[in-house]
Length: 176
Image (cartoon, rainbow, N blue to C red; front, top):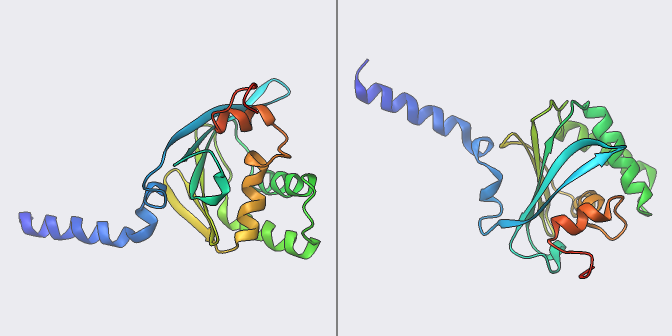
């Protein structure tokens, strides 16, 4: 095969990937690592988390990426059900119909994760969020209320794991 044909094929393959081939860093170009931590449940490591953004002050006022690298296999349904439960637990005033719609959005955004797999959620203030699985765009949800409620699971004042929140935001106990 001629070199120009190989080059054309490579170019076509790159173009065919389009936005799905883009990584989350294009959504948060000025991102730097803000903090990292581990989430454990009854002594078992479930995932490691890293927060990327520009600053930790007023975190919900700017785009950021929350990357979760799973240490265990977890089904998509378990991820969705747990997320809905956590949104409820935080005292969300969202009605059940909206929660059901959000659950369906999450089912389309998540996958059955295997140990070592990464899901990165990108928060886009006033727009919604995007979910990437192992660096590839899986789904975009254009719902700012959902995005805020979802990321509050980790970064909101009512989080189940305040220690992880502090680690992600780069805070220590004396700063909190």
